[in-house]
Length: 287
Image (cartoon, rainbow, N blue to C red; front, side, top):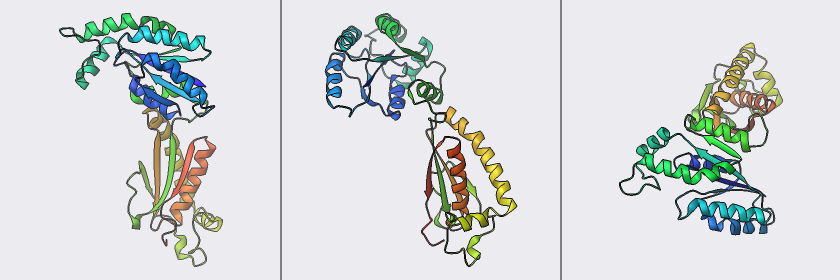
């Protein structure tokens, strides 16, 4: 069982880290009392594989917070449970700014105490945990996308494009634009197989329709430019933290040209090791 403890400074980015880690198929529990961590580990182990990857977020909000965390980790080690610690932090200026923006009090700030003093106190309390950490991530200058990339690098399987799913959708303009599309391309300028009698009842999934559509130079020229643009854009979307990208290809009825082009684009992206989902929204609506 993979057991990850997410901790660190208040305002250091633990909640954002937990959200990202959850996307990596970890079972996440936020703000678990430290004293319960060993019992929880035993319960997870008793499920015999149901919870293979578990992440627990814990911090100083509870009484005797970090003393109890250290004791809990010692008990985990003594009972044979392996674990890793992800420590999230940021510089004082960034943490102060985050608390001012959220308008929430620092958990260690007592009456009359400044945020700066509370942060200093927490740094002192938390230092032993930081020294034990397997990973230390400073979020002071990270965008959410950059944080996502860093955590994927640390905890995701080693695949080149693990950070995004690309939905390639065909659709018909006569049925309306897809509301969830990030990028929309109109291929109604291509020759239409609908007007070829022997192709009318077929679709862009059929070889004869695809051969017809790609038998024109404007189609191959368009595909070259489309693929070049998509290959350029996807890494930039990943860098900004986008986990899902929907590329919509539209023709009149969503049955012939858009399906052929979307299918070809999806096949190309799979060859580049992207996680691709094919969606032919209007394929069976009459063309």
